[in-house]
Length: 233
Ligand code: DER
Image (cartoon, rainbow, N blue to C red; front, side):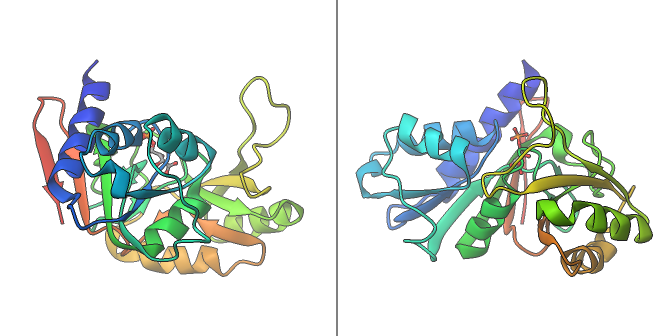
């Protein structure tokens, strides 16, 4: 279908245009778009030279399934290039991430990468954060603090919801780090106010990390529904 095709388009173009023979340590993100990134990296003639750093359990499986060497964030605090998806992308390349509840390790890998490239289908290219199809900014919180953080988020004007498991998991989603996710809807967030909102949320006691990635992505590849690709840097 169109969305799936646009994911593959953006991922293959991003890898083909940015992965270079002298790259060694590669960050692999989480979600359904980066499935194609891992596939494309796995097709590279230089694959034996690469070591790939995951952003969570699913990402680790992608690396293994594509016959790529697996490394860890502990071993590689410096990454040459990282590819990851996003839930929303604004005109300044600020992102909302965390739809897959992997935002902490995603942000650690993105922060460790000399180059951080975002790949996404056209639904994510919202121009303004908070307009997207997903509601809310994912925020990773220490379980004991979730009610306190929810209260403070409400005071900031947000509508917080603890992310609960889909059928098959009673109670809240628990991240790879043993924390909860609060999805907090702040409505539309103008590009110039993203950084300020992020620091306000990050400074709340109990917040481990936010799904706002501001000033981190150098380049984005959007697969359009007409089969073209839009890049922004
Ligand atoms: O959780 C994340 O931030 C993922 O990168 C994600 O939201 C993008 O997922 P998708 O590629 O499956 O849309």
